Image: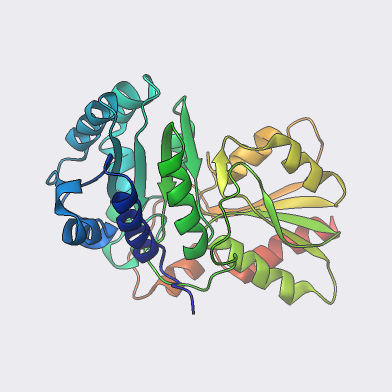
Length: 309
């Protein structure tokens, strides 16, 4: 059975890539045990740099490394790498279009036990707003491995967000990453659900719940920026309306990107996401997803709202 934890696959893939290319360097901000940068530290210590609790400095150092031909992957919790290092990412990396790869681990509310200070409901919006930035949100562990390899093999400033917890894969093992290619993972003719990250699996679950009444197309949108407008419009034009589903604020994330794309199409839309608020502490991941309205049942409710007009 394939590995189902995005962080674990990310670390394993980084080790493989570092062995293949000595110019790849992995930087951590005192969280290598969580981001899985520790796998590189243990296997190839000369390709790992521990920066301490200093995300901003880590980003600046990565910019310098990229200037001399290295391929730095910088890692921290999504809330810290997108927030604490914003200025350095903007000024020292993105303006120069430098070849730096940024990984936001424990994204969304997947760090359920540590509460809102460690949960990132705004990182996609922040990174989407930075010019020259690519934003990738893999659906599962399988796609994470492919996306990590894509990032290493292609130039440019890129941000990828990863979930902390294990959950079932919904994409094929060893399939290549389909960059900027929204992918239909379930065909349907009544309503289209555009989803990213863990919400792809929940959208599939919702489609199954509604199968006897409503035909739901589920599209995995793992590249949030750039967004393939042609494909988004194609999957939205032949249905009654669309739903977006993301473990992120409804402000500025996947839903905002799709709405911007469809602004002239007169397509009914519903948004499933975090309703402009911070996260909260919870006893388990399922509890906080239920509390914030990020479940298959909530997606099904949104689909029914579109379908019934």
